[in-house]
Length: 60
Image 1 (cartoon, rainbow, N blue to C red):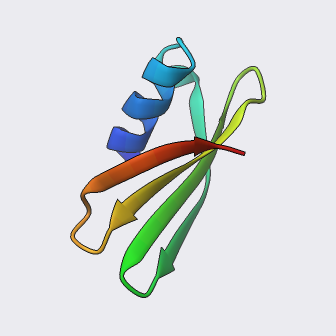
Image 2 (image 1 turned 180 degrees about the horizontal axis):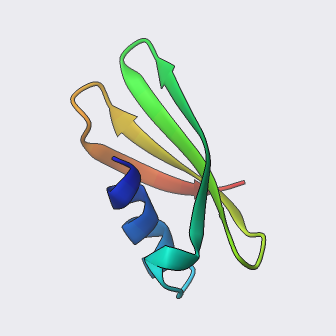
């Protein structure tokens, strides 16, 4: 999930996955969220369902 999140964020923010930092990983009942940022301090959240399927990427 973390690698998928980095790839999605890299695509959105037009940067390389190596320039993406994961800040936090949260597990909820039935879903997961990964919080991160770019080297330009652009924050984002990746959401995944309970099976680990990527749902969406949102800016924070």
